[in-house]
Every structure is written in structure tokens, then in C-alpha cells.
Image 1 (cartoon, rainbow, N blue to C red):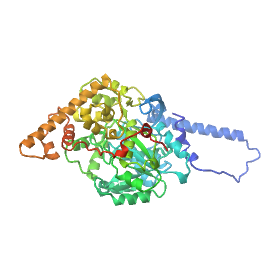
Image 2: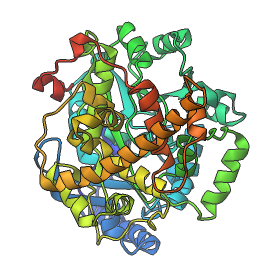
Image 3: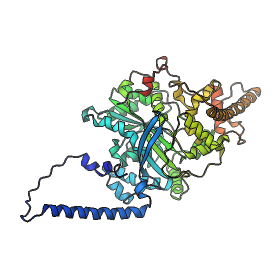
Image 4: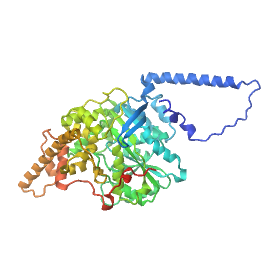
Length: 535
């Protein structure tokens, strides 16, 4: 922990040049050794005073914020590695000073950014157990950038997973609180809906957001214009390649508009895939409500105020959040590829950094009615990465009782099971993990995994049967081509199968999969391309 703290302590001195020359001459009887001894004693007393204040904040101070996980098995490399991590926010995080003083003394950020950092520190403390950063995963990225001169530095595209509105807040907070990771405050590609919300739109633009029109078939001319302006000098851009939040925590098919504009700009860039692992979600209820076919709640200032009241009154707790990055992808090597390929490549890297906690395992156990140990053993057998545990287990939230929520939590690791689904359920496998269209992997199944998959498939079959029965009934009543909304209104909601699963089944039966099929020249992927060259 003390070694891990060194980059934080010496950041101002390691990033600036100093030249000291005094015009004063020491007196003749000046004792330099005694002077140095006095300085050390004063520094020691000061440090002891600071440590005493820190201990008042938390009895776990010596081991809380800085963590080491020796020989941590990671599925992407099939080998052991050490993890060094830092807890940067949340109820379990120890702040040595006040939030305001911390935000004021950070080495980067405007007054407005510092104010937002101060607010976010308080919000996270009331709604999150801890936000933990896998610092070791940034090593390769930081080492590669450190070897480049300023003129050779590329634009860095930060590509996080998108499960919650917290995502862009967390990424910006990491860049602000840990500048030694090599990440500067990014420009954020945000949905144009934000720009129309009073105050919130203004705050987003001040925080570095530029607004993108999503869901339109034609190219957004403003996106190309904004990218040209932003990338005139090396900078950092944050973009969610899935385009919108996943309503049921599965991976969505990557959008290609931003990636295509990026390739056409001919700028030098790298993509840094980032995985934000949540136990629970702050917007879980509203997301499932939309997944069930209901109209989504409008983003508004009043909705934000209502949510803030709940947050600061202690009614929202999302548990732990764990952030990790993969090796950066060299954009110049990807410009010749179809943008869909690059999108799937980014998503494949994100999936490698998914970690599963005891909370996910127990929720899955309740969802499909199997023992937790069986699920944990199955995930271990296929190389799924378990959440690093710092202290004794049992830190997870109160388990959800609603079947739909349990399924949503389980789908956090649904992509890992997608390759093990039978060929008869290939469309469901594509729904769980769209990037499997490109990065199809031959897997060796086993009895434990088959037992878990068979349980999941039963729910998929039940969802398809319910959807098919409604479609058949409507056709018998004279509706030759019933639409999605009409079918969804007639679906049974008896609690035996999550309603959102039946809605997915309706889309599969009426339209097939929603994933974009890659072009022929991107279908064959070599093992070398799967790993993708780093910076």
C-alpha cells in the first residue's frame, strides 16, 4: 500500500521541472547536519499528525484504499498475475482530508470540474460501497504512452461498457482523481437528449461533453465536425460503442457511426477498452421497466432531484464497483477493417475483464434454482474471472426477490455462457454476446456447465413458447402481421418467466436477431487478430 501510494504523493514533482538557486549564503556557524535533522523531525511529527486524523476516519485505513491480490488468476491470459488496486470512492473509501479540500488540491481540472468532483465524492459515498480501480491493468497502456513524445502521442478513445448513467460519471471521476494513470479529462460523446435538459445539458457541456444524434440511419454531420475540431491535437475521448445502456445487462451489438467517423478523420488514435463491473445498478428499476416494454422515464431535472433525495437518504446502494482496462487497440491497424469488426473487437476485450462476485452468483442461484456452488464451479471451469475479495466474503447487498432482477444480475456474466448454448439456440447466444458473430470460439463443454445451461435454456424455451402462443392467437383473430407492441401487450405476466425475456423472444420470432452481420472480409479471424496488436 505504501509503495502503491508513491505515484500519488510524487505526481507534482514527477511531471514538472524544477531549478533551485538561492542568492542567500549560510552563516559561518551553520550546521547543515543539525538543520537536516530538524527538518526530518518536523516532517515526522507532521506525518504522525496526519495519520492520527486518518485513523479517526477509518479503523481499516492501513489496508483499505490500497490493495494487493497476489497470484490472481485472470481468464484472458490463462495465467496468474498480481493485481494492485486502489479504492477511490464509496462508503469504504477513506479520505484523508475533507472532500472539498481534496477536490481543490487535485493536480488537474478547472474550478467547475473540481466542484463536480467534490459533489461526486459525496454522491458515491452515499450510494456505493466502494469503487475499486485495477491499477495493474493500466500498466501496459501507461508504459506505451511514456515512450512517446508529445508530437507522437495518439488520441486516446476510452471505450467503457455501458450499464448505467453512472458510467460517464465514474470515468470522469477516475481521470480526475487518478491522473497518474495517464488519463486526462475526456471529451464525452453523449446522447443529444442530454442537451435538451435544463441545467443538466449545460453541466454536461461544461464537463466536456459533445452531443451525438443516435438511432438515425443517416450520418450525423455534426459528429464529423466535432471530431475534426477535437482531434486537432492529441486528446482523450470517451464513447460508449453500444450506443445506449443495456436494459438487461447483456452486451448490445456495437454501433458503428462513431468508429466510422473516427476512421474517416485519418487521425492517429488508440482505443482503450474499459470494463465497469457493477454488483447492483443505481437505475436497475427504470431499466427493467423499459425492458418489459414500458415507456422509459424522461430524463429531466425533476427526475434528477427525486433520485438525489433517494440517494442522500440512504435508499440507494449499488454495492461494489470494479473497473479494469484491457490492452489498448491500435487504431491505425484497424482503419482497413470494417467498423463492425473494430466494435466487436472492443467488446471482446471488454468481456475479458468482466468479474463475477458472490452477489452475482447468489442472484443467479435464485434465478434458475441451482446451488450457488454449482454456478461458481461452472464459471471457474470455463475461465470466468471471480471478483477479487479483499476481506471476508459476505459484503454483497440484500439479495433481490424479484425474478426479473435476479435474471438481470445473472446476465452480467451471460456472455460467458453464450458459446455453450446448443446450436438450436444460436439466436439467444447472439443476444447474450453479439461479438460472438466475429469472435466465435470453440469451447469444450463439461457436465457442470451443461447443467447450468440446460436450466437457462428452459427459460428461453418457455419465453419463446409464450411469445409464439400469443402470435398464433393474434393471427387466428385476423392479424396477419402482428407488430411487437401488439404481441407484447398480450404476453402473460404470471411471474414464472421474466417479462423482458418474453419480449426478447418476440423480437427473435418476428425479426430474428438484432445484431448486424459483419461483412465477409471480417468473418475470418485469426488467433493473432483476436489478441489485437497493442500500442
